[in-house]
Length: 239
Image (tube, rainbow, N blue to C red; front, side, top):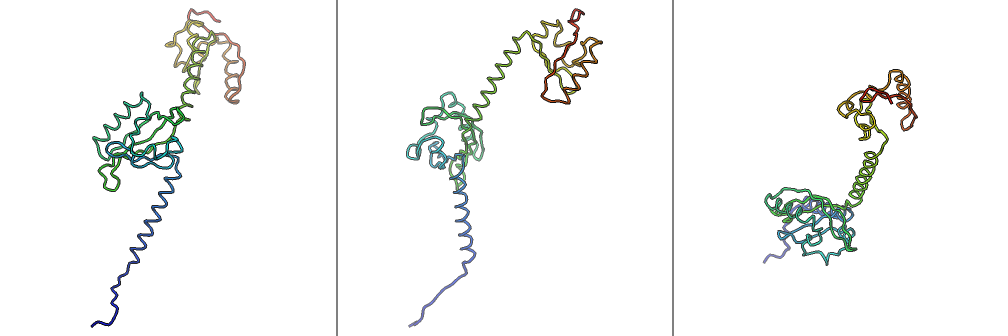
């Protein structure tokens, strides 16, 4: 008989340290994901939602129970759906590839919000086995861009229909823009004026006053100054 306890021991310090580091790393990445303003979706090969980060509920208003196992395309704006389908087709044809997407997504309050991000096909990656979609709410940016574009259209319409002449000179005083009314008022075409010194058609006796005003303007950015001068028209007379 063997009247003893037999212990077979090995040093597992490195393994325990590695396990602890892995757990710490997982906690760190989970914390980053859970507190991120970006949305992370994991989609299976049928494009059904297998996982979504907590920020998805905050932004879309939909709970995991409403979304997991469903196709997220059902909430994409009909006008943007063909773009998304084209993105998916490209992804499925190229494992490991990423595609950019900008689209509108239906929120639970009935309004569409703008989303932008990248989808990456990691279905062949044994550690992921998903299409990873990382995107964020860019509604504020898109709406700001639209307001700016509308404002530019508004002011362009005012300029193009104004009887006043508006010209833009660069830092070398070369004319880079003139409003359409400039042709009607001066009889000079854009070809005759754009790219030429803005003072070229100023009356010789008024050049000195114009130069003084321009120097003062350069020294005082943002300031407007009144200027009276004579300007030669296309038919040779001064106005």
